[in-house]
Image (cartoon, rainbow, N blue to C red):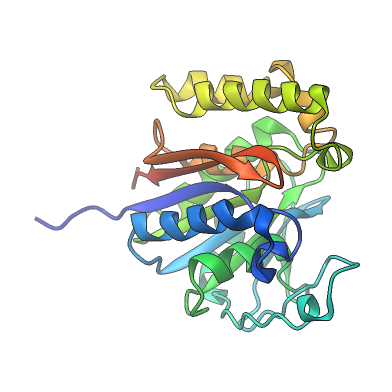
Length: 273
């Protein structure tokens, strides 16, 4: 009997700019975790990435066959601006997504010029260093509606249900208070980080109906430490997309230190129906 198509979704904390690719010691466990996650599933036939570093009034889909890299950071050594990751695009998959994502209540439009930002090429260069897995990037919608981004994940999963072994990658950071990153031993930062990560672990790594998990994520601001950890939502919304596509509890779940703060990583299967 022929097996049904199986796809995957993941949420990762992608670290600080290009530092994971520059050997920064604060990212060692992050790099090891991404390498591990890449071994837990078959090598993808394509990757769809939703990065914290691209938000638009609409939902945009990058349709380029040969996307360039967007070095969307500043103040780093020269080598950070010479990183090369010549990953191909997936124009046909992108066209399918443009059609399949209609009906979300916001316009869905083509992007044919913007490069792939560091929320895309940094983790992919760690997970798939050969740069041989075609990649499509989809933007966040700038209002950061939890409901919309859960539905976006669900619609992505539905659109690719006829395909096999596609990875939907939500690339954000489960802790993203930039001022707090500079406060290594600050009791408030430690307390809020730990409490919010404990809530995430309970929501993401406990068996519960999918509808209940979605409701927790819709009401994420009520979680302990939520607004301290996320003064703005862009680094959390990729999680909503990944969970919107996912089935039940994760295949793998890790909480590790990244830049001195606890950060979450999860991997889920995406059913064909």
